[in-house]
Length: 128
Image (cartoon, rainbow, N blue to C red; front, side, top):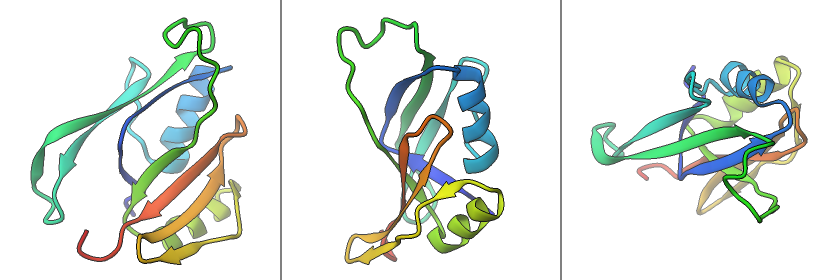
């Protein structure tokens, strides 16, 4: 089952970057590379390349890349089948919030990662 299919772009810090990178790789299927991040190539609704890449990176807490900001965040990840992914994450022991929203904008669910960050999972409406 495909888990996360893309994001708009996010860069963030972690207290234990390697452990958090491993959690995202195992539970959300993100192909975390040795440099600590992943690149998602953009695709259209037909699955064909659409000419772009979204970058994602977990940096060590000591990084000064975002100084002086100490902002909090929530990442929105695109998924193919929200209900199936939520079921798998629950079975794997992840902290999944029970609420799933279904609206004209798609289906939304949430999981809490080991660092306490709220992660939003989004299944776009059909055809989008």
